[in-house]
Image (cartoon, rainbow, N blue to C red; front, side):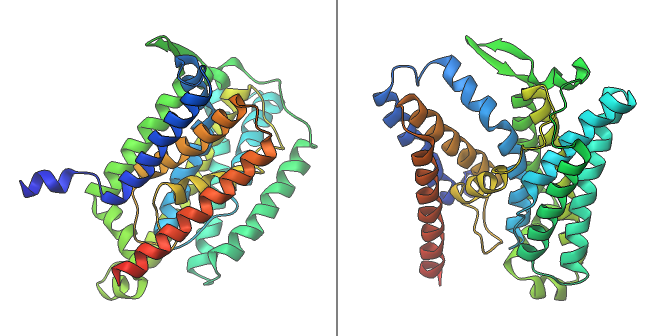
Length: 319
């Protein structure tokens, strides 16, 4: 019986899940189109890029850090992929690998500045956000790259599932969530991530190399941003230098709404997926209701504050 209980999802995950169900019930009562299979497939397609970025953001927040540069690093990765393919005639796999290498390098840079120079993650990633933005604009000439090989849009292709058109990119996103959930839950490296977030000093005293764990987390986060860039290019069919300007806040919002503590050491990556869906459902539902995008941003801000306040109160209650 105890082993069965251990396999149940943490209670903190149920709150976001309940919120998602209630949001779906509310918007279904406001619009007949909301419950259509086409609309649900649209929501999944809209959240897949932010959803993958949020995986990397979750890893960093679990260590009590934060990454403000994620959106712009993702945009830079997309520009590198598309420019290398269009300007140098590189094959799709090689061009994508170059983009992944660039985003991973930014993750490594963030990690080195945080672990070796001991700079606060907020300041480090605020700086690399601006660096990535400047490089993206300069390298692309602030122009959208549309001359890309067909292989780069393959992940945006869809297949029919229960009457809905589901893209292969959505399957990749879900697969990455399952893999990350398993790694965090069942591997020693995953448990080390939680330990560093709970107490870096106590973790170091037990013999765990906290700096290596942190550096690895930032590198993996950078890799996630590269995968998100692949999905963004596949979905839009272009490399957009103006992409990524709101994805950093959207990713943080998804992580917080999903129940991961901003103070580190507590959370579950599947909750982040639920958080990303909550954001997608609210924006989609409000759009169907004809609500202005300004009010959609307002609602998202309120949701973030409520989620952080709930986390703070739960921490105080646990003391």
